[in-house]
Length: 326
Length: 313
Image 1 (cartoon, rainbow over the protein chains, first blue to last red):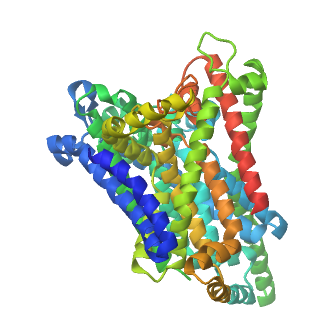
Image 2 (cartoon, rainbow over the protein chains, first blue to last red; image 1 turned 180 degrees about the vertical axis):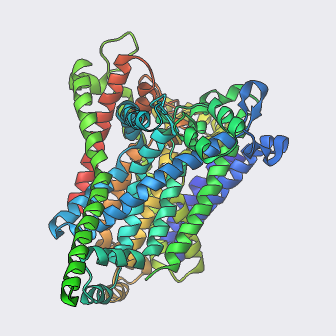
Image 3 (spheres, chains in turn blue, orange; image 1 turned 30 degrees about the horizontal axis):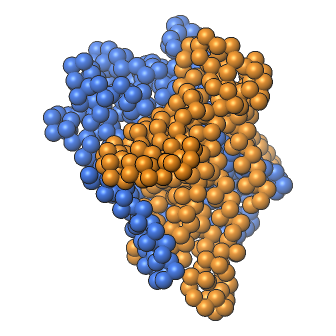
């Protein structure tokens, strides 16, 4: 009934907003603003309600359990959370240098004629459907990374570390390619805002172009940090491409971490195993979730977690960028 | 060693560092776009080959998808579903996103406008799968009553008008094209709103005053006179947003669900991106081929929209 009212009221609401635009413009516009705020509030409330059964049963433990065993109705999203953190870490480590490289290449290195074209290419990377990235990761990037990583590791430790082409590492590398444009866009925006007198002063003291680029990057460090958080938000929420290459495996976490404890080497070993992230957990498990009593609430709890992460990361990013406005 | 020699040495070292550093930046920048070419090349090489093997372009664009036992097949239902949901989503997205953008761009002095701007900023970065789950949750709450009180009576009344009506209007299933379009709309709104807002915010003050002076009403000033000043940016935003939602998969997983046949839009609806997601993960050669063909078609649609947006903008 609640949902019915919601859908039925939504349509008159939008019509009213349009009507008000012609009568009392400001109130009409405010209604549109209210629409977007209400949507976000409703979304969070909806997830709280949907996730309530499992939170009532397990408390917050649902976020700190590793066991994902539908047959015993035991759901813990900690492994998926670890997977999200690890893939995002790999992705950010690779994406930030590339994003800075893009910003410097466009503003310092390329001749003015080519800047627009290069910028368009970067924007196109952001517009590409994620499922096509997934397809490429599945058939090209995954096998390639497996060969490359194994030939290095055979040389270093004498053994293959990547037994499957579809691991958290593959997902991280694919994510890095996908999120670079988002970080780059923010850094480019800041880079273009460096005042002309500052630039002239940098060259006046005899800086080389590299030194100038370096000083300017320090000047826009707020934008770099803001871009970092925005890209991190994207990396944590990305679903389809990650789900296609991450392997969808639950068991490794327990064997690796519980036996050897949380150490650097066990975490690194974990990166080269197939795993799962929160968003890919939702995408892969939802189709058969209805046959279990508590799985749908558990998946909504995962979505709630993603929402809260998204809100927090965006808040930080927006704060940093606005504080650092030149 | 004289001081001059020393200074020369330092300069030489700095020049070397300069070239090495710039080279490193350029290398990193190029590394960010190389995968794009690899992906486009991979998709078109394998995709065109696959389309030829599955029965030629026309056959591929209109026929049903191949079962594991078939040798020929296409993506007809998926293409129809994607076009329908993208068109609906884009229209609604612009209809809500544009006024919203005007609000947060023009009324920046209002406190509530800043709240709304923060909301839009959050929504544009939201994981798309979360949006899909939200629409799914609303749909599963609303479906039964919606069918009983509203859509059932309506479709009973107007269905004698024509054979085609049940294809578009009727009691909804849990998964349907309209839920998919709603999810795409929610993704499109913040995209259009943010670019509209920054376009309106960049209008110079004298132009704004002239618009208010000549237009008479505030509505005319904002939506007729000033719109001309920003129409290019808004059109680009609309096109890029459309390209973005045409390829979305995650929000459709739980709203449109996907389908293998030409079917009513009130039930599970097929989409090109959903077919790629599904077919790429099967182990049948012919379906993987069709996934590559579908990817080539989807990429062509998106590249076309993108290039139009760049030339116009």
